[in-house]
Image (cartoon, rainbow, N blue to C red; front, top):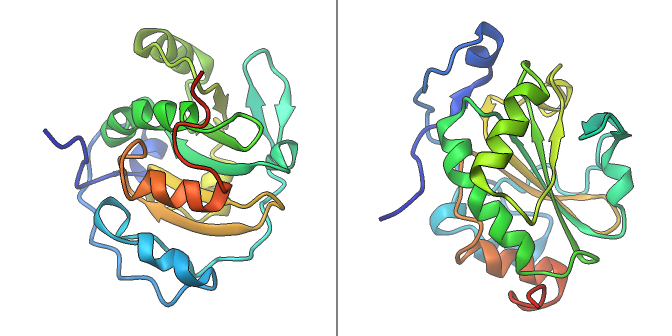
Length: 202
């Protein structure tokens, strides 16, 4: 059965402390990407890939690692970064999360960083039990309970995923969920990383 959801949660629901699923109007097809032939991956789950921000430097917005350490995307420079903004109350986010965990396992950690940042205003008391229950082993949880990243991206809802190259420049983004452990997503990441899926497996 397909795991892809057809709606995503609005940030207004987050602000109101609600877990109500809101229908999202389909996103218009992106204009021709600055990334050239990467547009061939904008099919199926990734049909909503948006290349209009390609080349934009990653923001320096801070977020928190477990234990309280403050990080930013600059800490992952040198790797391809798949940044995912999500929340525990977001049903499509919850469905998508295991696919992101699998995606990380398919590529070497020195080449790819799947960075999942929770927008949960309840903080770690919401995120930690979720992580333990789901058994996510390949990715680490991060937290931005003030939603600064989502605000900076002008996100209309969750999940939102933004892909950066090794120099910290945006490649593309996608609003709404995708199956990151299946084609065409794995092929897109392989093209950006420069290695075939499965290279990260022992």
